[in-house]
Image (cartoon, rainbow, N blue to C red; front, side, top):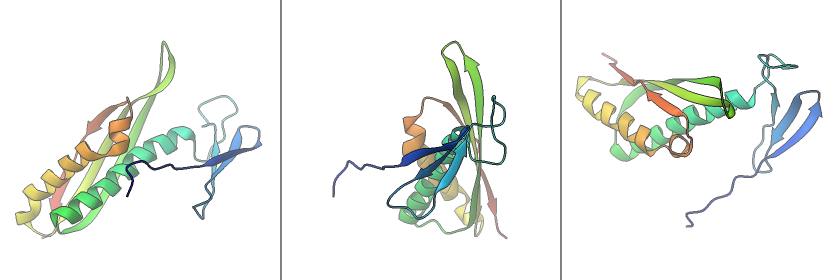
Amino acid sequence: MTDVYTYDVTIDWLEGRKGLIESAVLNDRIEVATPPEFSKGIPGIWSPEHLFVAAAGSCFMTTFLAVAEKSRLEFVNFSCKASGVLEKKESGFIISCITLQPVLKVLNENHLSKGIKVLELSHKSCLILNSVKSEIIFMPHIQCDN
């Protein structure tokens, strides 16, 4: 097994400020467009900004699932809200901050401290979070099912 992987996507312009993202190894294609906050932006279509924040949130989730499995953490539910702040700096627009708000529901109170440890390890281990220069604000919440 190698430690280097390549993920290829193709982006084709469709019209105006809209394009299509696809990969030869994936079934779905995603329409992408300039967000409506910008000139000629299109509402209702995924933007690069949404995809950037979604990449951070979804990578955290998949990292959590792997760490939880390896740690044998039993849980009932996991969800995560991710919010990115786009702001203009001297160098141009950047996503300056991403806030992750995972909510983990465990089976009983005995799993609370283990759940927090798994969430924190997942945060530290997430490759996307470790790859971006945006500030990451991590606000985990854990609850018990009973």
